[in-house]
Image (cartoon, rainbow, N blue to C red; front, top):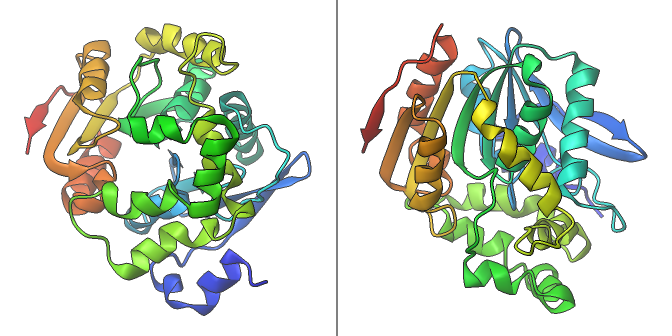
Amino acid sequence: MISAQQKIKEGALKQVYPFKSHYLNLGGNNLHYVDEGEGQPILMLHGNPTWSFYYRNLVATFGERFRCVVPDHIGCGLSDKPQDYEYTLENHIENVVKLIKFLNLKKIILVVHDWGGAIGFGVLTRHPELFDRVVILNTSAFFVDTIPWQINLLRQGKFGEFLNRKFNLFAWPATFMTTVKRLPKIIKEGYLLPYDSYANRVAVARFVQDIPMESTHPTRKTLDAIEKKLPYVDIPKLILWGGRDFCFHKAFFDRWTALYPDAETHYFENAGHYVIEDELEEVSGLLMHFFRGSKNEHRSSHS
């Protein structure tokens, strides 16, 4: 069977994802990551059901001025997809910590999206001395007591996992439910490439199962510990939000802005969950200004 990485090298996707692959072995499992450019490191953390492909345009844009490090969480993208792995928030956090130490990253600019928010803020709140500033994109790192019924259905034990893995009912709908602008066919193929079989969708399913809606859920303790430390994150923050997101809706944005009233915020009324896809040019400009800034200047805009 041809690997996803080989398909990229031999197909049209190499034009949009031309990056060299790097791997870090973590307990027998290879964690894939992109490491492009030199300078201050930008660590970009994806969520579910994406992979480092989500940040491809940012790597292409900022790799000339910064060091762009973009891992694929275990089970995702071009990383190994073990079937018996514990796909928990705690393990994903620890994997990122190990990558940071392996690469000796310091003064990190953190960019988080979707599940990358809980993972990234899990790392940041435990090791604040390593971080310089943070960008928040349609994500959460705190408990919310509501969940869309479509996602909750896929949380329901073996039945939800079967729907997710057999029929690809998470990664496939994401190719048309997460943006306002229609994604080109090649980009849809890129998002779906690593999740092309029942076995390869294991992490997609387990990420959904790891959403800690119940107080007894094993990951709830990890998430609560992160949430308690959020008010003490004292670095410049930029919040870029797609307003047409049925999952990470405006209540999440409002929660972040209440937590961080001094953050620079931009709310895109006509962008979806994949805000980078819908508003790449404006997002890139805002990021460049923020990355170069010496201090956090509060600005707010809706567009």
